[in-house]
Length: 351
Image (cartoon, rainbow, N blue to C red; front, side, top):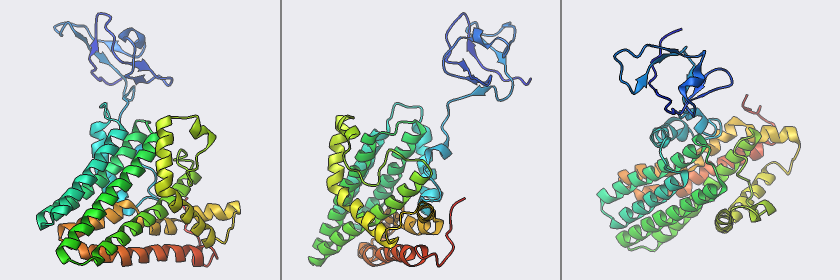
């Protein structure tokens, strides 16, 4: 037995501790007397009258601590930039917030506010404000990861939070693109800038919906993320559930319902309606397809906006948004339709 010194309140005081079924100690709720056979108490001697010290075998104590790996969804279907940059940064925030009363929904609201602040900065028009707006966009994106990771880490994932997050994203996107469009219109005195920004907003919304569809489909195969449905139709369980979640769900349907149905139709077309179980397993778990569509998620899209904002190249951003990113979307669709559907290449299935 190795010595591990743990202060325990003496005199019958209650300390948050408990024995686990495997003999370990979980700091939850019990008194020191329950540790008989597990602890060796040292003589108090000159120690403070408020504490007793004990010796515990290594591994006997298990704290309820934040676990980063358990807070993320999946490296296979997530965006590369999320996996290696944004989620690790978000993990630092989650670690700080984990043992606080802060809730995932409060973080979601903070993320939306960050997006609205970015929109206000874009409206100023000066290069320094545009750069600051880009940084606020990235803060918004990081907080958008924090809320979900915090919910999974604290097991506080709810349908209310699911819809609040998506609606907040849309509100922030409309504000940001509206501000960019208006600023470029004033700067160039050209109404075409409003058309470009509208096309950019529509494009990013549909592309992110495409990514989310396949991301969620893969997670369903992994038996994760089951509270999210591919098509969020109102079911009996929704009518009998949380009234606030139901109201948010109806707003979600107005914003995203048509997009989800469109992506579902596109998916059915790409696979020619094939519903064979083995085929669907391969179809939704192909790593190459998931990695390709991963470039269409919010992390990548908003990071691109941030970089162009820092260099005050918003017109370049709109070009990349409308042409390059939609080209990536076309590549995703063609890969599934031509190669994955027909089996012309071996499926890159995840082990």
